[in-house]
Image 1 (cartoon, helix red, strand yellow):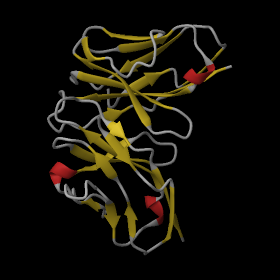
Image 2 (cartoon, rainbow over the protein chains, first blue to last red):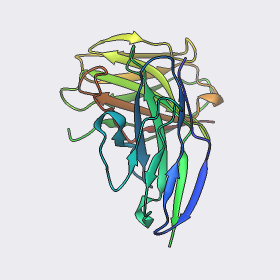
Image 3 (spheres, rainbow over the protein chains, first blue to last red):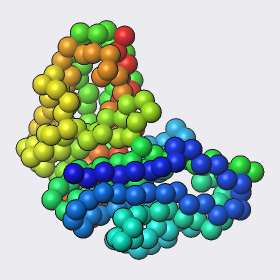
Image 4 (tube, rainbow over the protein chains, first blue to last red):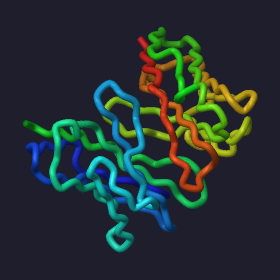
Length: 109
Length: 115
């Protein structure tokens, strides 16, 4: 079975502060991990994936297999980062994505 | 088209009626997925198509739910004898191929409300 846990439903930070959105997963094989973001009144869109090892909009995420985590980080949050963030996992045997319940990030001015 | 298109964007219907939700994937995308997002919950997988066949239907919650895909393109999700617990946002996604790190591109969803 595969499971994704995002322990924080709500996260509020001030502009310029560092932000970390937590994601832990449960999967017996080697998963692919993704972060999706949904801005207000927009569709869900891919933010980044672990396999690309890229930084998008200043966000990074490192897959830690030992801790089964894929936390999303940004050193200096911006107001436009306010959105709902979903962590998702895809197992090696299939195509479905298993999502966490999401974290609503609010960046205050 | 430029992205995944879903229709209708909103649907309100009475309990017991049947509903059909439509998804038009990105042109050339062979994989198509349906998810459901209920109030206060994350996205829940329903069904996956590769071409016109559905190798994974394991997420369909009951036999009232069915889906088909024709011509390797448009898909319809049908819910028969709707119940109030079917109220949710139904999201469709497509990807170029199955897995292989191909990202899934989502539509805007259909917000279904059962009275």
